Image (cartoon, rainbow, N blue to C red; front, side):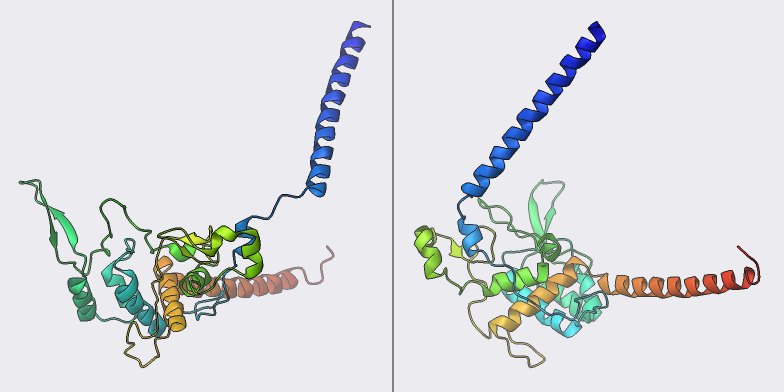
Length: 278
């Protein structure tokens, strides 16, 4: 009798525990349905990235070197003073169409130099960049290092579209309906800028692209704000995954090989088992 009694007690305790959890879950669901959480400012005003069609999109995408070179020019003239590309070497630029002499000149003329230490004196100095060097880091004393852009398009959802939308989103303002519920967004805090494509809506980075023709493209393309944003987004897709085009080619070759091998294997199967019941 005692073992049966103990088992009964265990069953009742377990049933009570499950019952309490079920009761709590039920009323949690009821309360959520009856009193849904209030909409946050991010939910009301945050926008998903706009669509961006690049030559590199899709499983068969290829890099458009002309556009990537234009994007590099935008990065060099507009972005490089604040953001580094510390995972990219100057000589990698040869992959997008620059020759060796051009790469050496770009490296030498780069405004931020490579830091070097004098092992005897223990002091720091600078030297010109070499083609084998990575793009030097940007550092601001007292404020730190701004985000590196090498992998930015892989670190953000819809990376290229995010970059493009963020750069062109400074002109968008909160709707009148949204400001009724969140009047504090009528004027951003000092040193901040409203951008509906940024996660928390206010960003400390001033608008990098302030107008058309901030750069001059050598191929004659008009450097509008929209075009510059597209081009630098395409460039950052390349910096994040410079081997993507080769990976796509290798993947296509593997798929074709597997299809051919599957066809040959099926043909061999039909030949070997022809006329044999199985």
